[in-house]
Length: 354
Image 1 (cartoon, rainbow, N blue to C red):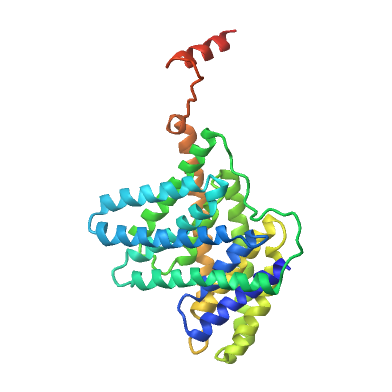
Image 2: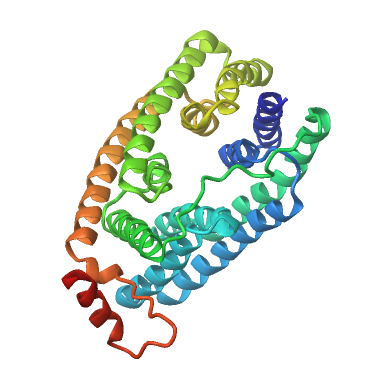
């Protein structure tokens, strides 16, 4: 039933936003998919955490840009503190969703908010509406396609390392790359590179060198698959793309294939989510009834994601080498109860001599 739940929520989100003419159709589809992929049964607390994360980061970005945008240094410090807390929250299983969604959506808000002509308030409110709509969409999906009651974990999140040293290293790795991406998107004119920015943070999600390398491969494979499906829809519909029924039906057929991948193991789920993202974003932004075709938008999306994946992989490798070259940045010394300061180092030297 899980593939059907994901497919139903995805198509319903696109249908509602298309019929009502909302500009954030991609988030209406991808938010329910992101939640349902990791959720095995209904969990009210998780939805509350998801909503609070998006609401809170929207308020944070509004305050930072509203008050500190004329002062680049102060804004950089404020953004650094905000992203640091998001990265640190990702190291705990109970707060992973809060941290990751805040990091992803917050980075998108900061990127678009840096352009004077962009209506950030309207964009944030649109994302808030898509976030709130995620709850009834997922609730209807669980009601229509319930799973038999089995002993499964509520949310499948990969186990986080409890070693304080590893936690600090992973937090530093995520923070360095997130800040580098923020600076690049502030300096360069990349207001039409939402997919590339999202790819950076998707690859960064494991917060390890090996995990990020695997995520990069998965992202490329899924993006190519999703873009090929989008081009196929463009060619099949041709002059009939103005028909909303055929448009939604063709999207539903293509999404059904990728939703089956989302219910498999972690690798297939990653490929499926990248594919459904690559399919949804260009089709909901350009190939909508009454607008132009999405062929060149799909090509641009594919090339920008490939460049972003390669550049992010290099940044993660450089950040990893920097952290390992300066271990004192993330060093943790845990004193033993009853020892005076400095006795721990003496005891270690005595053990090495013996």
